[in-house]
Image (cartoon, rainbow, N blue to C red; front, top):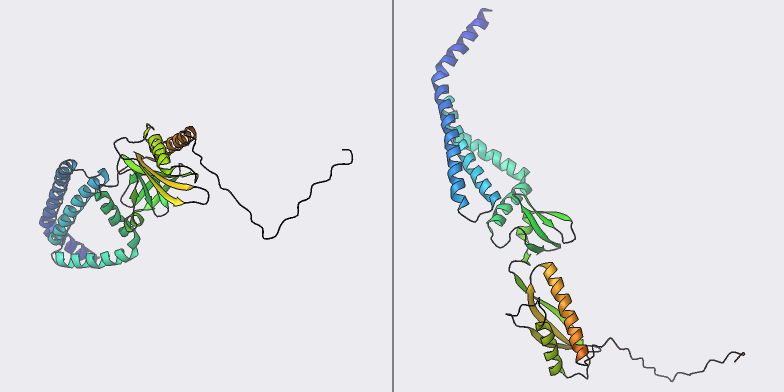
Length: 287
């Protein structure tokens, strides 16, 4: 009992000796809270004037607050425990960060890739993109993954590292993009006249951008036709592309029919080395 009482007295004396240090530590923590809150507000006001995405703005605010809290915590621990120096704490954190980095490599990779993707201005929410075998409209860009909505309605969640490592085609980066279709005419058709008829039909379509040039090129000698490559500019969205192509194809078909120019279907010619015997079927006995 005497030993227990002596030990309790020693602990009480140590606690009394630590009271000034604990008071200073609490004051430091309170100041850290105020500084972190004030710094986050300043960062929010400054970043709102930029064109950064909202998710990236929140990330920067969080990082500012975390850094301030780390510094405040290190100072507090140095005050309460004089034997623990910031160098020792940083060394311990360094070893821990290496272990955590190996354990969560994929998570950190996607996290950093998400930050770099958010810094890009070429891929925005609502854009339709293609990346390898993935295609869809961008709905959400988070710090770990990106949500793409297929044109058929399915939702695809793509890791940010996949989008960062592979080439991305942004189909709707501009309001208009070029579209093309192949058109074949018969071999006996005047190609110069056919070119003018096709070009005029394309220009007459309301969905075609009249400020851009309509191009018609004789492309190749097909099996049954001379094939033209027809190119024009229209809306970049998939629905606009389908509507414009439908309108252009119907206009070209109508114009060639009116001009009496044939759009041939494949012909097949059979050649036999030996003459084929032909026999007429016998009439029925009733005839």
